[in-house]
Amino acid sequence: MEQNSFWQTERGKAIVKLGLWLVFILALIIFALVNKNDNTINKENEETEEKEVYEFKKYDEMIESLLDSNYEFNYDIVINDTNYLFNGTKCNNEVLGYKESNMGIIKYYISDNTYQVVLKELVPIENLYENIDINYLDLNILFNNLNEYLYNIEKNDNKRTITYKKDGYQVEVITNLDNITNINITVDNNTYNLSYNVIDACNIGVLSE
Image (cartoon, rainbow, N blue to C red; front, side, top):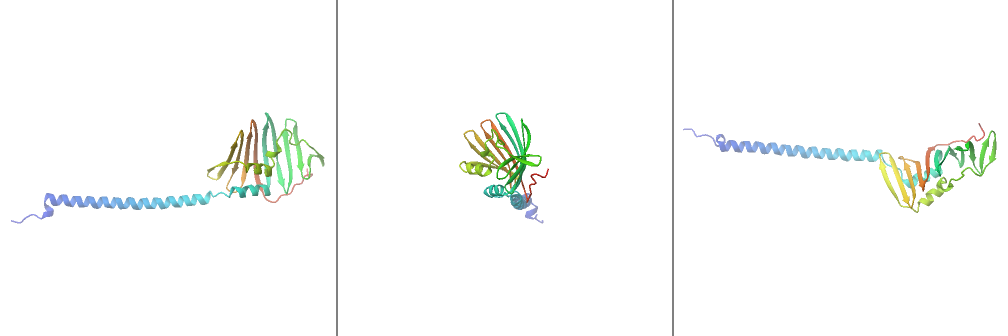
């Protein structure tokens, strides 16, 4: 009588099935490890690309750049519930701009002195910054004073916010990847919202209009 092969017995068949399951599970583990490794590499590549895309210029270099650059500016200032608006251009250590307040709108020019531009004449004025603390508009003075303060940094894509806080005095310096774009100052109930747009070489035609 011919005897059945071991692999044809119930026990043999069970061992074969168990072996096939072990091979299947091993294949799944290998697949998962390979997939995880690929995901890790992709994630590292994405983080590297993101770091390259959103790499900010050093803050100190941005400050020096703003101090040395030509720029267009807009100032929205509130002092004791009175609003003052300034906009214009700083070009080669000269400033040409407009001031709007409850007294109306004037055109002004700053060089060796401060003038109101009236038609084709420069008329010296002394009250351009009435009630406004010029220390917050003079960037050299402002950043020199900020050296005394600690600050926090928050980054969001290509925007960076540097915040200084101390005793009712708060300053937010906002940058893009290359330049300082805004400085927002709160002192007690007064606010200075200052915006800057760095420009290339320029020329002020102060009496051209």
